[in-house]
Amino acid sequence: LVVLGIETSCDDTAAAVVRSDGEILSQVVSSQADLLARYGGVAPKMAEEAHSQVIDQVVQQALDEANLTEIDLSAVAVTIGPGLSLCLRVGVQKARKIAGSFNLPIVGVHHMEGHALVARVLEKELQFPFLTLLISGGHNLLVLARDLGQYLQLGTTIDDAIGEAYDKTARWLGLDMRRGGPALEELAREGNADSVKFSVPMKQHKDCNFSYAGLKTQVRIAIASKSIDPETPISSASCKDRSARADIAASFQRVAVLHLEERCERAIEWALKIEPNIKFLVVSGGVASNQYVRTRLDHIVKEKGMQLVCPPPSLCTDNGVMIAWTGIEHFRKGRFDPPPPADEPEDAVFDLRPRWPLGEEYAEGRSEAR
Ligand code: ATP
Ligand code: FE
Image (cartoon, rainbow, N blue to C red; front, side):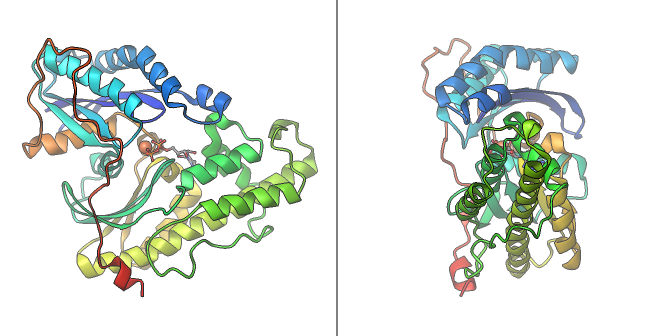
């Protein structure tokens, strides 16, 4: 099988061609980082326009780099949710156009399932069931993947995701917003992680949920108390100012990740009661490209006698490979839609799922927490 994957759920326009043996034939990402940095966040209408401008070119490049044309494809996979509906629509329309013109089946993919399953492209040993921690700009999930399409959600965020906390902290520290997370990770290496005492979120809640809004507030207060001006870029900061910023970055990162560590430890205990044979913790989503996160979680996982699996950074942040691969997995099981009509009108109604939970909530979670 050879599948084209298309992803436009948020701020990156991505496409890739993947073969069912796991060979990645091409991978193209066009980022809206410049727009994001300029306007401080994703404005749906602007993001939609940016996707529309580049989608044809991104898909064409993915086919060209794979040395293929549409006729060589077995199916088209596309993200149908969760995400911004205006943005999702651009990708889905493109996928339907190709599938309609070339009579190809189409597979609608869950963006977060993509983040989780992409780990299976390179790690052939990774079989179901496994535990997964998905950490990105919009999600913070602990999910027990029991089988393809069978997910049990052990925990989620009650407010912000960790990636959002990284992005805001980076902004307040005057870092380059085109790459807020990675810039913060770098700055944190210069700082003392014990210098600012942030408290670890949700200590008193013995569950697997997350909260990052309170930590964001703590960071904002610390920044104000050290008279750091977010409008002054770090490149223009004095030596003393830079070191104060680095201390906040390091202290923030330590506590943000401690929260992940505590939740993962508990989730492993819960997961082993449900599926005694799990051996892997998969960590994916943009924040999983952070080396400090990987090192700390590796430690926890090893202590529990399990193995950590992290996709390479280019497969942790949004990409087309994860969508193509998840499409392949479902296609193999016969889960796909027939080709849409070749002459489908522009305003046709189709399935988009802007809000779409990944699997069921673990109902016993509440009693476990007691
Ligand atoms: P979602 O997957 O929830 O819809 P998204 O698609 O915007 O959100 P991803 O591309 O998966 O998110 O991840 C982007 C997030 O990852 C951003 O918040 C970014 O700051 C963060 N990130 C990327 N690299 C790093 C890093 N090295 N350290 C910390 N955070 C990082
Ligand atoms: Fe994502």
